[in-house]
Image 1: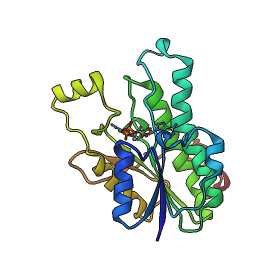
Image 2: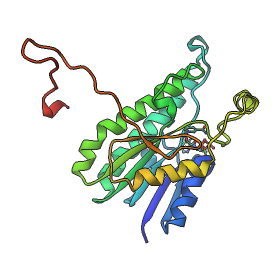
Image 3: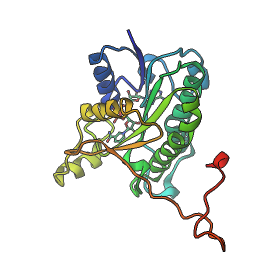
Image 4: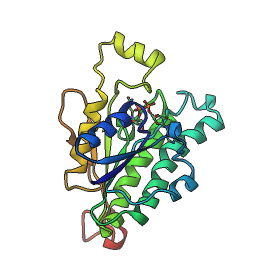
Length: 231
Ligand SMILES: NC(=O)c1ccc[n+]([C@@H]2O[C@H](COP(=O)([O-])OP(=O)(O)OC[C@H]3O[C@@H](n4cnc5c(N)ncnc54)[C@H](O)[C@@H]3O)[C@@H](O)[C@H]2O)c1
């Protein structure tokens, strides 16, 4: 039987990922704070062995909209769960996963667009998208794929309080957690790596295309690319 792990698998999108993978016949291990696993703790990862599929999904919100109101503890917690939790997980998986291993990280639309309501959350998810895109070539040399899914607002315990009330009052559609899990499965089985998949209600998962950046301009060329070893 193929094996999988899901961080943050005890709730919301993570629980839906667990159910989706089990429906595909995977033996799934849940790595969650509630099961005694802290993704932000490097030592936790040392006990993790090879799996065929890994969903690095655990995440927390960042804090207040006004940077002046940030607490150091709140900031560090968001960075450690959302960024360390993915970087340390990928580091471990790169070491133990066999060829053909597949990783999907739950980022967010907050990794692709500004989120004035929670700038630290946006910073962590932008970091995750940048890491996934940038780590993909080295992982590909090990035969491992990595993708990110970038969902909009989803109907999980993470969306609560005034945010949920505002969304409900505006009639804004929320994603069901299992729609995000389905998008993760599409990303996992796409054959692509280093891609970010936008997930929105009423749309199929979209393989997001980043615009190309302008390179330096020289007298000979309108735009120069970096050397292959640096691109
Ligand atoms: N809900 C949304 O609207 C939404 C939208 C886009 C992306 N996301 C992302 O989806 C992921 C899952 O969010 P959710 O909405 O299901 O939230 P959730 O709060 O329902 O579940 C999060 C899970 O992560 C676990 N967790 C938290 N910190 C942990 C840690 N240090 N180590 C291990 N487990 C930890 C929690 O115990 C919980 O089970 C997060 O990365 C979140 O940022 C959520």
